[in-house]
Amino acid sequence: MRKENRNLKQANSRTYHLMLLPAVILVIIFNYGPMAGLVMAFQDFSPRKGFLGSDFVGLENFRYIFSLPNLWQVVGNTLLISVFKILGNIVFPVLIALMLNEVGRSGFRKSVQTIINFPHFLSWVILSGLFIDILSPSEGIVNKALGALGIDPVYFLGDKAWFPYTMIITDLWKEVGYGSIVYLATLTAIDPTLYEAAQIDGAGRIRQTLSVTMPALMPTILLMFMLSLGSILNAGGTLSASGSSGFEQIYNLYSPQVYETGDILETLVFRLGLENGQYSIATAIGMVKSIIAMALMSFGYWVAKKRFNYQIL
Image (cartoon, rainbow, N blue to C red; front, side, top):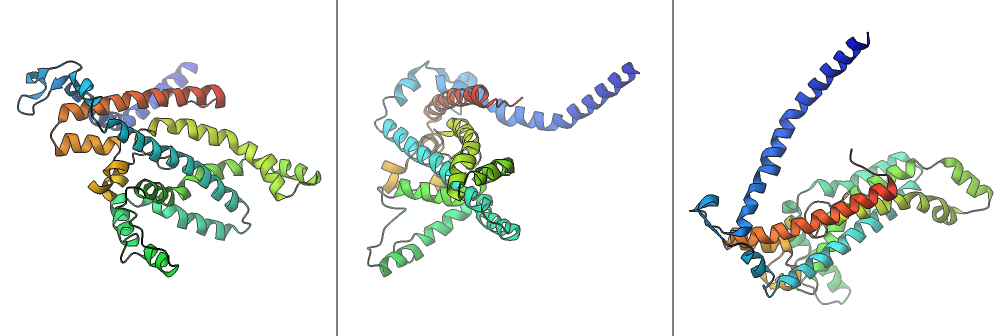
């Protein structure tokens, strides 16, 4: 009987593994296969000569990228935008989750959730057109409202002083609703008897939030912050919200006049590699960025496992 059960489990396991096979093949082809191209970082790569015929230059490309005059400015732009996105995509989703948790009518709460989650599913290609119109210094609704208040028009997408903060705010608008989902899920798991005990002790709603709700949310907040470290060089947000790269957003909204404060590592790599044809230099920058991101992500997962008992497998 035990042998039959064991054979049945093995048969089921083989079936599940066969179901996973197409996805595994796609991951190998599109995620691991292109890693062979990292050899370009150590070559003076020429598309005509290919990987095997291009001259090997060792670490020369890495020496070159660290001598670029604008490299550290780009790194600073990336960190500024990314850090504010990460913090904003934690603070504001938590506030929204707390407010929605206080709403008694489930129909109204679900309607609000649907509305604020919707922007997450729109691509930056679509949203960039909307924001270019909305933030236009001449015809945009935002500047018309500022003009009605007696404030001079602001060129949000063309002024280097305003551009990085415009990227942060527009990203928050897009992702803040979706980012609140994980915190709402945490709130539903809080034991109601804790609130009852706090009420018996005379705690009001604010005191209950500070003494019961926030301590329950804090492990999730810290966990999401640690897991978002891997995206810090992508100008992205948290893992739960905009954990994807910020390249799509910035590439669709920036222009040469804001390169000084709006250029990030990924847009620099794009221009060097695809626009200027410096494939080896772009690969070297991407490789350094990936190594740092891997180290930060590994550290984040290590802390998450040690502190919060979180693990993938």
